[in-house]
Structure formats: C-alpha cells, structure tokens
Length: 412
Image (tube, rainbow, N blue to C red; front, side, top):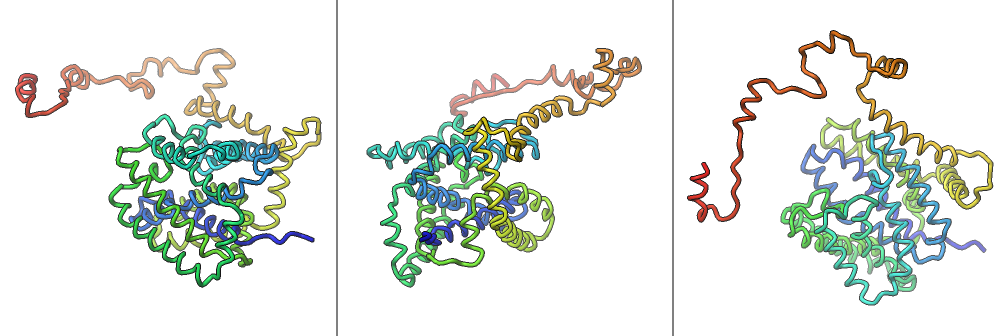
C-alpha cells in the first residue's frame, strides 16, 4: 500500500517559498520606498531560519546524508551557481551567487548534523558560534561560511524535533492551535517593529554577515527570537491536508529554489521605475506564477532526471551515454575560461587582437603614439593638479581633543 504523504510540512514550505520569491523580486528595489524596504526586511527576519528549520527536521533520514544526496547537491551547485556567474559577471565557484549559498550550507549540515547532535551542551555551543561569528569579517560568504555557522542553530533545532513531538502539535484541534499561531505572529511583529529602528538592520545583518557595530550582536539575538516565534506560528497554522497549488509548491520547492533567481532579477529590472503599488502587485503576481510553473510535475520530472544523471557522472564513470547533464558539467570549465578571457580583453578592439597574433605587436598607429591626448588607462596629472598634490597635506589626531589642544594648534 502506498504511503500517504504528509502535507503538513509541504504547506509550510509552500508558504515560505512564496515569501522567498516575493522578497527576491523586491530585494533589488528596496531603495524605491521605505515600505518596500521594510517588507523585504521583515520577511528576511524569519523566512530562511524557518526554511533551515524544516530542512533540519527532514535531515534525520539516512537518505539525507547519503552519497547520492550529497553528490546531487554538489552537482546542482556547480551547474546553477556557475550559470548565474556567467549571466551576471562573477567568476568564482568558491563564492556562491545569490541564493545558491543554501546548497553549500545543506551539504555542510547534512554531512555533520548526525555527528554533532551527540555533543553535550550543543545548543549553548551553537549560540556562542552564532553570536561570535559576527565579530570576524573573515567569516564571510566564501564557501558560505558565515551562513553555515549562523543558520546552524535553526537546522539543529529542526533536526532535534522528533516526529512524535511534531505529531503532538499537528494532531491538536486546529481551533486550539490557531489563536496560539496568531499570538506568535503578533508577538514577533511587535518585537520586529521596535527592534527594526533600534538596531538599524542592514541587508548584511539579516544575511548573517559580520557586524557593523558590536551592538549588532544583541540585534542578532532578537532576530533569533523573532525567527523561532514565526517558526512556531507556522507550525500552529499549517494543516495536514492538500491545498490547491500551495501543497505542490511546497512539495517541489527545491526546483523553484533552483530555477527562480534569474527570473526574479529580470522582473525586478522590468518593474523598476513603476509606482510602489504597481511594484508590489507585480511582485505578488509574478511570485505566484513562478512558483506555480516551476512546481509543476513536468518541471519536477525533468529536473529530477537531470539531477540523477548528474549524480551518475560521479558514481558510474563507465557510463558513456551522452546526456544534457554531462553537457552542462562540460560547459562549466569552458564558461569560466571564456569569462576570464572576455574580462581580460574587455575594451580591446578586435583589430588589436588580430594584429597581435599576426605580428606580435599591438596595432597602435604613429599618430596615436605621438598624440597629446590623455591616455585613458594611465591618465597624467596636469600642472595645476601636480602643484595641488605637492602642496597637499593631512592632519590626523586621536584622543581627547581638549587635552591635545596645544599640540593640534602647533601642528596647524
């Protein structure tokens, strides 16, 4: 008999995926208005912690940290992060582009969670790491290090939630859960409202990068409070029944996550300049359309096949059959080489390249060599600029200005 799928968690993922795509459409437009800015920031306060929590809950299975599962994430990261690099001008596999940090983070969490779960006082250790990572700017987006560390408490919270404890809340009458969920949302909203202006949350702060000011460490604690309130609220409000579109969005959320980002960037550039109301409406409609299209069974079928064939490249190297996954993996190194060459020769005329390879000399005419015009690569300062530069100086002092008043006056 076929096992009935639990739609409870699919519905939570569906809500979070819709919020994610909606926020990503608006993310590039935050400077347009305070309303858009706050909308994005409030979503960012909890949507990824909640997603990570759900990932942790399902990370207990043996399959989640199997060789096939890890290789699938590695393959998808290499292909789609590289694709974004080629499209938007980046050139490193070590620094994830846009949302693809989550694939690297999943790899790290799935490989380590079942080991570190055995550590005593794990929650205290994770809280310390969560706070202290922000004091070290070197812990940044390289290999997604900052977010792997700072979102790990949410993953392990989900990991430590047993199916039995989860079922206790799921099976409670909905009318008893509903007011609790609404109360948690209200409490999170109140905390977020007062914390937002006090801690001056930036995009970097919401994405768990280094603190701009030591007080941001307290702001990060407040973010954790908001996130866990919203996680519990979502658990209280979700139901274990299929909801048209929403349940399927949650079920196939991985493929929406993988495919949606370039489309949100294009939509953002298209609606830039529109009124705030039009921007919000366009973001809402486009996020629903993106989620519905990319959660379809057809997309899921071919994306699953693409990922499985990608895994076979590593696990069955003797398989000589050609497929689109092998082509995609071959394009990655070629694409990086091409992008490096394009960047290196950016601004160089085609005639210069031809002349260089045929004669070994750049095609610069005598007139250009003797021209008095400014060199666009190595500009020369004018006589007036030289005089200003030679006469310029800077006075720097540190300490209590009152006590150093005499020294400052003598320096002046």
